[in-house]
Image (cartoon, rainbow over all chains, first blue to last red):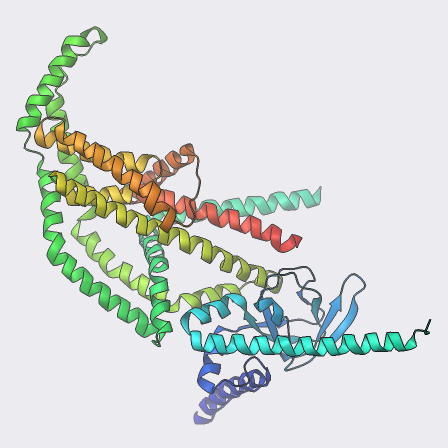
Length: 171
Length: 345
């Protein structure tokens, strides 16, 4: 009988630790203590997607970010379904939607059966209202993450423009 | 053709479910009434719990603290106002002392008999009719508001429901959103988020507006010297939730009481001036500040809502019908707008 209870608690504990392990690797949450992580876990939505199921469509109003708990996701650009990125366990996408309500710039499709953790704007605003300290910490890290992505994009644009100029014949 | 039949089938099923739902809700109207009141109050108090949470309290302790403060407030109010309120309702139930009013009504009756006899007006017996009407109104208020069993049930159940809606409201919302299929999940959450802001502002605005108008009316009537100022003030505040007819209803009750009290129109004249001023203050100062969003409704819609509300849930249904129809209108409007926006962008 004891074994049974041990197993039940072990499974629960393992699941909890798994989510903690995933969250701690996400830059937005990586310097939060376990108490703050518990608060975050409470407001995350957990969803399951079948293989080839659409997570969101390009053009939909975005409401927040998705974190891949397990499985892999393809980010595709319509209408040709050109693959922009392939994301796996522990990766995240859609974080810009936490700040504005502009339409999604690409579609996200589950490549394999996926479990996702979803962190959305209403919950972030509610958190800012109830726990301004934790909320502003997350907001700061979010700004930092988006800044990092911007730096990477700038670097890629620079490299692309350099390579374009270098291949052009000098007139 | 088969697709059309499928649509018709779906519409028929939805129609049957809606009718069955309404029938069920009507059958348990008392419980529905309590849940609606609790949900509205929980919505109004929610920002207070959020504020306490932002000061470092847990959700449960914040809710408990609000309830403790509320019960202390109710305790003081009970000691200060309930004797006054119950005395006024008992007095209303017993009927007025109609000595002065009697003389005036007799004069009015004579005047009507003398001038309108060609219309077949005879033997009006206004005084006894009015006396009976006032006594039965008082009895009706007594039956509906101060019926001991229902008061005790409501006093236990409403705080109980509010407590759990406040403490676990987020979990209820999360559970509801979780039950949505993947393709509608993000949109449902988006709709919740948009509606929450709109409806929260609307309900809190209406509540603050009704409270201020109620307090102003009671204070003005007390200053003028009208009897039953407290109960008329409460009625005027609640009636203010009904656009167009509400303010007139509050003023009418106060005017009738003042005429019956004094037997002349002097006090009634002051009452009309006071209510006009309160309406002016409400329109110019209070509403633009506290009611962030007014739900524009056609007077006919207001009238029908009040009648249906009254038929289904009695006087409370009449008072809450307009805010509830306003709430449903905002829900429908925002759902359609946001669905279009969500799909079009």
